Image (cartoon, rainbow, N blue to C red; front, side, top):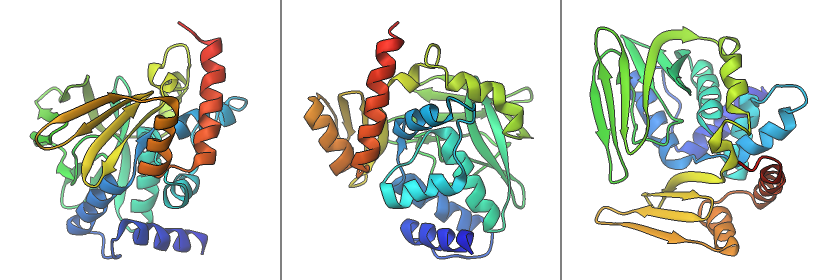
Length: 261
């Protein structure tokens, strides 16, 4: 019953009507999720502290979506993929985790063929793509290239890193060493940054620490924000819950004092 209630609330949040598990329904879920849900490190920082004593850094899918719907949060690739995997499974899709080296979790959905699904990259991926066919997606912010060869599936982002995707399904247990590495303050640079990306009035907007970038069709605007302006953008413009923002910032400041490199 709890799952049914959460699914109803999530579909309402995404403005998607429930349907049979087909490609059209999947693409609508992906498109609206990408436009409405943020990529951010605030919850990553919070989950790191809460899981520090146990080594269990990943929240449940229910926690992920309660934050998304009611707190304006999102997450990184790990939490996005966990949540979207849970949603698709409960909607009748055949869905699996797949891993991208050197560090990224995404999904494989099997319908008439295998599809690559990725809602946790902050990339312009608004649909499912056949897993074994090359494609290119782009917007005013970046160019995303998915290159399939006999040996590898290679992902190139301009700007951004190059990664390699294995289409073989994996479990979260298989990736425990990667999860641990991604929660290491000494080596995982992105956990040491307050970062957020999302769409505001259909404009891709990113904020890393206090640097704001707005990617309009005709130009990119960059500005350095004060601490007060940063809080305003995150809580008012991105719609992030202020109490969770304050919690993450407090942890972030305390940990940076211990892990200055």
